[in-house]
Length: 370
Image (cartoon, rainbow, N blue to C red; front, side, top):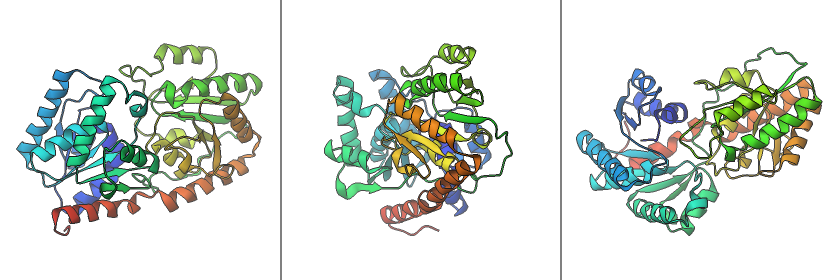
């Protein structure tokens, strides 16, 4: 169960297919979006659930909890995996109420730490503690997040499981030898277009370097979420584009064609990532990376070998890293990128994550998988 059909399809399709191929009936529960039909076309059962990610309205949230309970009662699931904050909280409570074992998977804390001392934040922490007590296990994608949950007493050490990531299909995200104009160097930001993902810093570096280098191009690919208060307004993107600072590529259901055509992926996030998916995708496709010394980002890069790590919000360091990429030859950039792919294949292959699911289901249900 996740907070979007998009994330279930793009981030978890591998494990869902794997379990289905073993003969298990899979139902995916998520709000309906453009990827819901893709999930049903894969042969999975699908249930829509209304979920407002940024709502704090009590009546809306209570209806959401009731919707979880209704779906769980109607379907009689044997086991449930929950992803992201609201499914983790409401889904886990509903699963316990329906006496269904479940696992909470924390995919990143986002703004959790920033707001946890507010009234809403305190309520969220207390609800998380309750859900953490009810969950059979709580999984994390990085040690920093796990330590936060242990410190806040949301979960206990004996329930906590640390994964290297959710994993990535390194065959799907692989270099294909796309031929490009080597006289032009392209930097790409890809992800949700949020200020705290470093989009503003990316634009500032672009403004400086495009004025200095006629052969450099900075591109932004991603979803503008108007419901998120940290979203960069579309009008700002248009203004940057009209000024010649960046090229906005809009949204895409498949990032690979865009990654193929660039020389470097830049992701200067200071958002609390779980483990950044776009960094794994870019590195798996043999692209050098510039990112920040931030939770969920630093672990993907070997500084100076597969890319560069800069301090969050530091425009000067970000510019310096981009200049280093510009000074490399095409062959040197390719060598750096391929070292990054080797790291992803070695440490973040989704096939290495599958056994966690198998063992957990077998342990908690008390019977082997088919």
